[in-house]
Length: 345
Image (cartoon, rainbow, N blue to C red; front, side):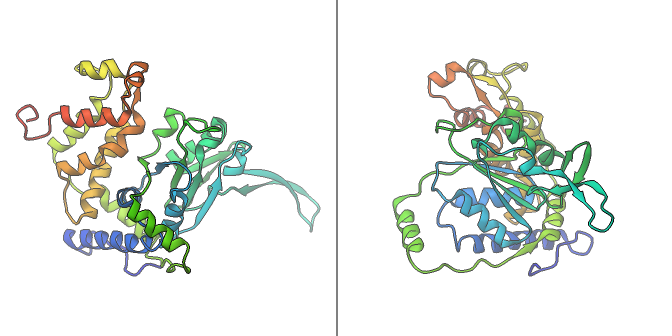
């Protein structure tokens, strides 16, 4: 159970609700930092995706505590948590579940019975998701979009809330299968975890070679998160800011009217409409988690990289010039006029 009751907009003022959500975030961060040293931006982004109700993809080489981070978040929340290690021989049924033939010991009659897979949980850690073939990766598509799975023609609803937190290794590593664009698009955020600065790495080694660390206490439960997700969606956003988010995503599409020459030269495929959705939803979550009751321009800009980087596909010309999706996003942030500027009014 959580330490405080879930906020209700009907029984508390907007300021009180925002304050409760901000306090919930701070409690989670405090607990997670018992196990995770450094990586402040990645930790904050993952927590933001929880409060916004979105799935999260984390990319990094082995040994950077990707799995530990997600496991620590699972411990900080009173939610069911399951981990699946994705391997080349993993089958879709190993994730969603399967029908088996069972015999009733009393009557001797046989019937098909569905056995739930690990996807029937609140937090699913898909560890090294790109080490399994696309057929198995695709087993999560329906779950991530519809919060349900269909097996043998029967649809089963997943528990609420439901989050997929996936880790992947850089595609340059041997034995990886790049996630299809359609699957990457299901993730609200794509985060990149990098090596720690020397001093923080020293602190990690000191902590992991010493005694047992502090136990992580549970902070909030599923009903809290469901309430938080609903309230985040109610946070207001001004029309010019909404328009800015749409223009930012649209500017990445090389085939649209008005796309810049630079985008046409370097981008094969731009961000989907889902990108605009997550820019706004992520900005709302950022605002409320910072204790503000409405969205500002910096809330949108702060989520642009994690929302857009995995939805932009660069072409061969860009790759040969060393231009990556992150460079495209930064170019868009520099080129697309913000509300209030002379060109953005």
